[in-house]
Image (cartoon, rainbow, N blue to C red):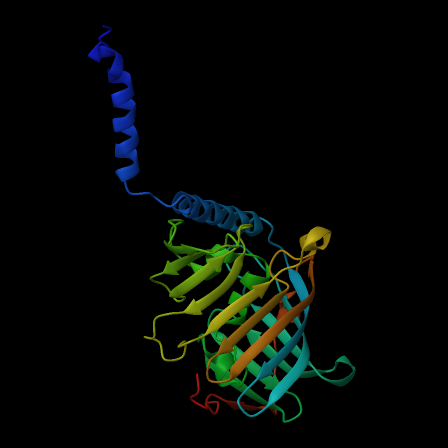
Length: 288
């Protein structure tokens, strides 16, 4: 009679026990680590892209087409935008709203302390102190300063979304199936959710906190060029800004040129005629 030694069965019993224990362990979704790593990768590309664009500063001029809507009307105009853009400050900046045959229908000047809009037809101007809501009060639904818009045009994303903050990544909240990652910005002027694509470019931003009554519900969306033409613009090709109450603006950057020679002070200044009427209070609809 052959009696099998218990020692011969031990490897088989051990293997069966290990298989049973592994089956009882909770399964961790495989995409969990991918989401975390993709979020870290996207944020790293976001900071690298912002830093690279910040090193490519120069005076610029841009040709724009702007469309905006209110609950009652819609408008379209072309514009010319220029500045001696620099790392320390984009100011002063100038924007001319163009009418028929390229003539300036309105002229806007902005520096660190002043916003000035001049209407040649009525020979009147609206002057405001340093305010992020000057464009809103002037009737254009754009909840930012023109200097901040210049930062977006030039791809200075980190300075725009996280001004004055360190490079610590905001809280990662999700990664979608397009490998776009969402981050919650808890402090600063743009509190809310920032969505970044796998190239490190901002896709959208939406206000989530409602402490500032003028920024409730604002949403930004960004479109980019692709392929070889992508290098002709350091920032987005199109910026769309919308408010749930029926206000929106779409800015198409038709061209942006960086210049070797800076604009002179005279080219950046806005000198009003001595006969111009200056207003310090602009009718505000209160909708924003």
